[in-house]
Image 1 (cartoon, rainbow, N blue to C red):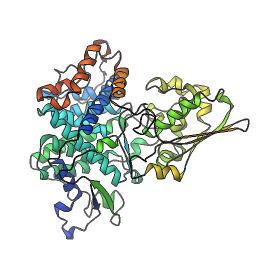
Image 2 (image 1 turned 90 degrees about the vertical axis):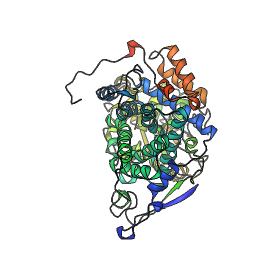
Image 3 (image 1 turned 135 degrees about the vertical axis):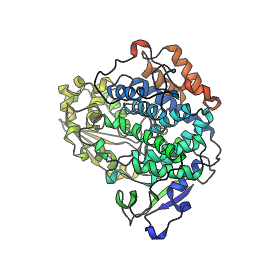
Image 4 (image 1 turned 30 degrees about the horizontal axis):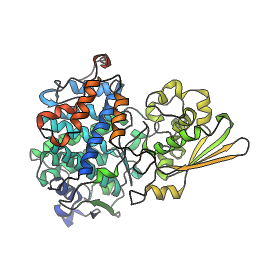
Amino acid sequence: MRNIIVKVHPSKSNLKKKDQLAWKIAEIASDKAKINKDAVEMVINRIIDNASVAIASFNRKPVVSAREMALAHPRKNGANIFGLNPKIKVNCEWAAWANGTAVRELDYHDTFLAADYSHPGDNIPAILAVAQQKGCSGLDLIKGILTGYEVQVNLVKGICLHEHKIDHIAHLGPSVAAGLGSLLRLKTDIIYQAVQQSLHVTVSTRQSRKGEISSWKAFAPAHAGKLAIEAVDRCMRGEGAPSPIYEGEDSVIAYVLSGPGKKYVVPLPRVNETKKAILETYTKEHSAEYQSQALIDLARSLNKKIKNLSDIKKIIIETSHHTHYVIGTGANDPQKMDPYASRETLDHSIMYIFAVALEDGAWHHVKSYTPQRARRKSTVRLWHKIVTRENKKWTKKYHDSNPKNKCFGGKVIIRMKNGLTITEEINVADAHPAGKRPFGRLQYINKFKTLTNGIISKNESKRFLKTVQNLKNLKPKDLIGLNIEVIPKAKSRLIKKKTIF
């Protein structure tokens, strides 16, 4: 690995392409690095994981809306839409839009946390859609996905967006563009321009994850993937981009992030070095924001130890800066304590999540979020007894540069009415690679079977799992097999509204 110093340069310095971050990203996207066996297996795991949550969200309203928009853009030799008959094809950018929304809707796929947040699995729908439309092989797809993960993970390590209230999809646009460059074996200069265009058009604010959180949280990554596809297409036609997009005098760093005086350090593999960043990422056992995963596991265990939850006087969760300020009381969002809040808001409220997991001793991607569940009187009382606070020890663990030492949990202090105090802590979620029950292929398959049960047939389940586990050997004609068709009774009705498309 190498550390790339990224800072603003005045226009008169005429910074050379080879010294720009976008060029260095493009170099690794166009190199001939050997692929790592474990990384390939993880790509397969993440395609299974994406399919699980996409099918589970098939009939949720944002997913239906995105799918109907995509269906208005048919293409004979296009890409598939998750859940539909594979003979139905649409333009790849619209397939990426529909499938990206389906993958993101339940907040239930993979994550990587460092200087910023990310869901690297958001790269997959766009890269897969282009692979289907352009007749790429399974090996081409693997290389594209590995590049997408490599770029996004390392941007997340080096550049913090959230401190400037910029949404994390600003790292996703460039990573998808780079992944598509690897997939299509594009020249370095084309990828360089596409990375810059993709960043330029995917900068948006974090208001999408603040206050009353709407369905846009699911649409945002899909939108970034769609924009990245369009950017790559333009650059393949010879068009250019705002340059240098990271280091320029009026660039993203200069006027959106920390300004001309800031130096960022972005780690990247050397040219032709094996891409393995996907192995540093982790998926979710529970459908909720990643920083709540470990605390859900802790709440489940505490459920067995506290006989009467009404005897609780107060619950204090000591945790990292990110957890406290994004999903905790440090966010100062009254919506996070509101029983009438949206599902998207509730899955970003550790107070709500911990209360429900503590009461139920379990967590469910549907049942734990129903309006009836959120408004249960006992839950509301318990929920409103919970506060979070930052503990610098947990913030330091969160940012540890060694992936094996990173922690995303916290310490829970429960004060009972009788004066007793119960204190327990957890470093990482049970499903984390360093957790009690790390996710392996079997767990990914079990998650897939659980989430798709009653939505796809057993034969379709077996067919998909057999196909995806042979990913490296798939021919271009076989990539259609990575789509999954739901059973007829699971198909949704159309939303009957007058729209543009």
